[in-house]
Image (cartoon, rainbow, N blue to C red; front, side):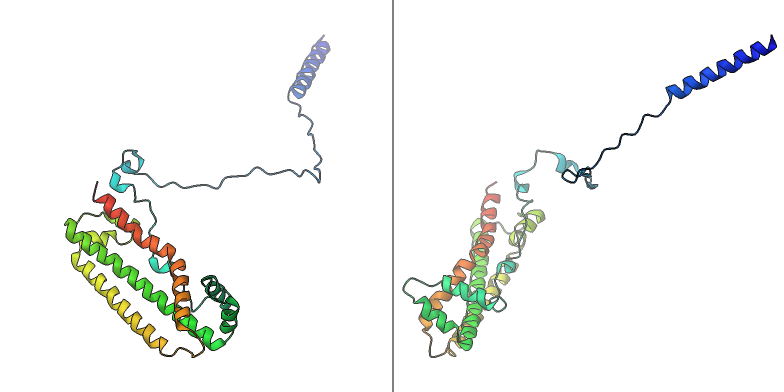
Length: 246
C-alpha cells in the first residue's frame, strides 16, 4: 500500500517536470544564410545630439522686427579679396584673357604673357589696382554712413550689438560719430597711397606693352572679381535704411 502511494507521488512529480519542460522549452533558432548579392544592412544609429537650453525669447515666435536680421552671418570683407600675387600662373592668365574686350587680339596677348618679366609686372599691377578699388569701396561706404548719420541724426545707441555682429559695421555706425570719421579718413589715406603706388609702378612699365589696354583689362578683371565684395559692403546700407524706418 505504501509502495503504491510512493509510485503515485513519483509519477505526479515526473508529469509536472515534463509539463514544465514542455511549457518552457526553447524555440529552435532559425539561421538565415547571407547572400553575397544582398548583404545584411545594419540599422543606422543617429548620433547623440545635445541641445542648448533655449531662453523664453528664443522659443517665442513673437520676435521684434529688429531681430529678424540677427541670424545673418557677418563676413570679413577682406576674405572676399583675391590675392593676385599668390594664385597660380595658369589661373591668373585665364582671368586676364577672359577680361579682354573683343577688339584685343588674345593670341598676341597670350604670347606677351609668356614673357616672365611682363607677366610678373602685370600681376603686381593687378594686385595694386585690387587694393586701390578695395580702399575706394570702403571709403565710399564710411562716407555713406557719415552722411546718413548727419542727415538722419542717428548716431548713438540705435543699433543693437547682435545686429551689428550680423551686419559687420552697423554697430560702429550706430555708436560713434568720431569712429566713423576715423574710418573714413583711414580708407581715404589708403586710397591715396594705393594710387601713388600705382603711379610709381606704371613708371616702370616695359616698353613692349600698351598700358592703356593693360589697364582696361585689369580694371575689367577686378570689377568682375570684386562683385561679391561690393554686395557684402552694400548689404549693411540696406539694413540701416530698414532698421531706421521701423
